[in-house]
Image (tube, rainbow over all chains, first blue to last red; front, side, top):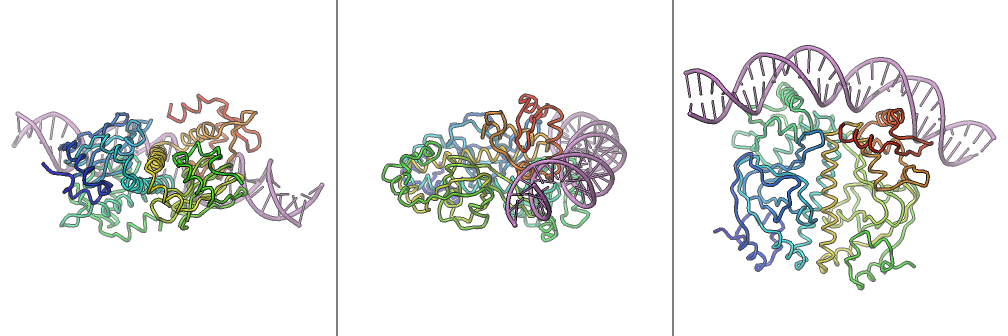
Amino acid sequence: MSRCENCIIRQFNSLRAMSKEELKRVSDTKTTKILKKGEIIFEEGEKLNGVFCVRGGVSKLSKLSSNGKDQIVKLATKGAVLGQRSVISEEVANLSATAVNDMEVCFIPKDAIVDTLNSNPNFAVEVLRHMAHDLKEADDVIVNMSQKTVKQRVAEAFIYLEDNFGVDDKGYLALTLSREDIANVVGTATESAIRIISEFKKLGLIKASGKKIAIVDAKGLADLAVGI
Amino acid sequence: MSRCENCIIRQFNSLRAMSKEELKRVSDTKTTKILKKGEIIFEEGEKLNGVFCVRGGVSKLSKLSSNGKDQIVKLATKGAVLGQRSVISEEVANLSATAVNDMEVCFIPKDAIVDTLNSNPNFAVEVLRHMAHDLKEADDVIVNMSQKTVKQRVAEAFIYLEDNFGVDDKGYLALTLSREDIANVVGTATESAIRIISEFKKLGLIKASGKKIAIVDAKGLADLAVGI
DNA sequence: TTCAAAACATGACAATTGTCAGTTCATCCT
DNA sequence: AGGATGAACTGACAATTGTCATGTTTTGAA
């Protein structure tokens, strides 16, 4: 069985601040799950008794709004830890996590995390730093959502996807999202997202092959995103 | 001079997890500032060498978007600690803090905070919990901003103001914001905010006396906010 | 008090975005 | 292969929201 001490993922997340003993404990209590595309890791309102460490694949973190639409708040990939916020504040999950790809995740029981937090200041500070970073990102999203047009947000989404998930050998975005998911990231109607994507294709900003999308004119897209 | 140990504000924030000695150190190094309405506490991009503890008045935390408009991300009142996120992640401030009222704030130098974080797990965890809470709130704001109409967001803003800042003896919202600030909280044009406020008055949802606004039909407003 | 500046308000119009209805295309199952 | 299903797309139209122009009220400083 794989051991946390050797997990390459550790370098990406706060687990690196754990001592050997603490890691051993996590390793002994953790379990690994394989999830198929579309499967749900946890849902909004669910009480979490642990966190999920993403070893492979991509998860969308979303929240249902009162009008019945799903808003994707964040996309989490290798190294991300899901559910940490809820475990720390001892509240039910306020987001749902769904596999966008086939995924592999480790489940780490709550106690292993909470006990380490309370005894190891390095770990607590490391987690704190991560959360501070997430909070900054969330604030930036708020500003973008409220001040940018849908077109600007779609442009930004493509740049985000390229920056965070990279491209394949043909230059296409490595992460392929459905038009509906793109709309839910951007916070618009699916039809609006589709129309804007078509327009971007006509303008030569992006190209598509099936569902795969590639950025053609990165500068044009970036200019559009900031409103030039 | 007032001492942190006795500061009533302490019960609202993470400082309560500090030991007597730690608090004494904070008390010895802190300085108090009085700010007039409109004055700036710190600006986006500024390097902060400490945090600000709000003793009185209200501050708006805002960020300039690329199109030149200011988005108010959060309103902070008595007990809030400003700049904590930037100090923890050792980055420049990503928000500006401005006094909405006359304010009184304590400045606590960075080192007093950082040293305590590194040595006192209780304090670190307490700060972490606060940040986890802020992150949840930020996620909720993202969903509201992207999925609700401007009208729903204005309705929600009034409910938020009543819930968080209360009402005066005549029932008017204790915190009076300019129409422009309301528009910047909601993420819309000032004219749009004004129109919606006028409409709410006509519908009998709110009433106004000068700049002061009072909620008349709380249920009607709440229904509108969730889209009934 | 008085006047200038700022804040508030409204109208008219354009631009953006959402909704509904329908068509085409891809995928997957047996 | 054929058909069923869902995703992708398009058109038409309505609703929402932003912008510009302009008038009114409030505020604050001389």
